[in-house]
Length: 331
Ligand SMILES: [Fe+2]
Ligand SMILES: [Fe+2]
Image (cartoon, rainbow, N blue to C red; front, side, top):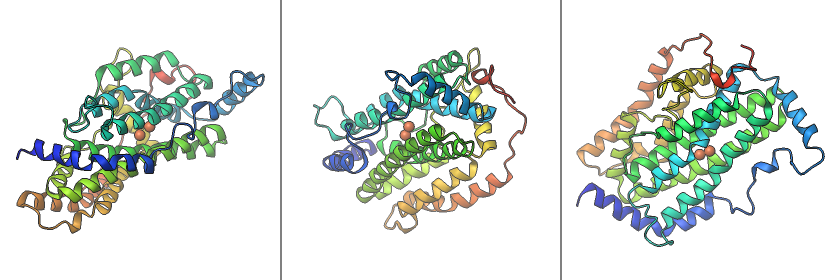
């Protein structure tokens, strides 16, 4: 049987469990937080006073902080790219009647994620610290440019990617929240922390999908995981550009910024890999094909190799400027 058919069969075999995953890892719409729970209520008389407070508190945060928050927001706002990508993955069949658990998962996951870009965008708008038009142009570019994460339509590779990526966003939102708290910006800290909590639930779900697949097809799964790590997990916003800029140019500058601030670092990448290796018990996999064994051994040695590279990595310390934070930020 071809790899594609094996994967389809595995996806179909697991599909009846997806309803349970949704109950375990997602929160019903009526019970979960909404952006308005954190932002000033525009129907209230105190709206303008609350906005003034937001703007005052925002003045305490520095240039690199705003750049990072803007890029995090734009990454969330490019959600149409992620939903359409996942809907196209083998086995996630939205046309097969409404009862396909996988497509229900993708819709419900998207619906949760959608609140992240929504709340952050509104906060940025009210803060008065960023050039919103430039932010909007970048968002439009990013959605239009799409992404290429190297997963193809392979469900195994896509779930490795999302397991990794949800934890990466958990880390970066959590750290941004901590920095906001240190600058006494309680509202922003709360928002980032609650978003980080969503990302963690999503990470736990996707890593469970992979673990379940591992139970059915360890050989195929471990090879897919190794393939993804060989080509490196690229960030979903790797095509980020500013107005007038070339595709991907702003991404490198932003990731240097995030690395400098300590919001997301090369060491975090290694730590995520170690966690995934541990949870999926890669080191204990046995009865694999020769290629499966090679993949397992590669994955087990990779953290140490990457750690050595991370230690040697140098990042430019020069201050990068962005059109998003041109007008208000002090360097
Ligand atoms: Fe998100
Ligand atoms: Fe997420």
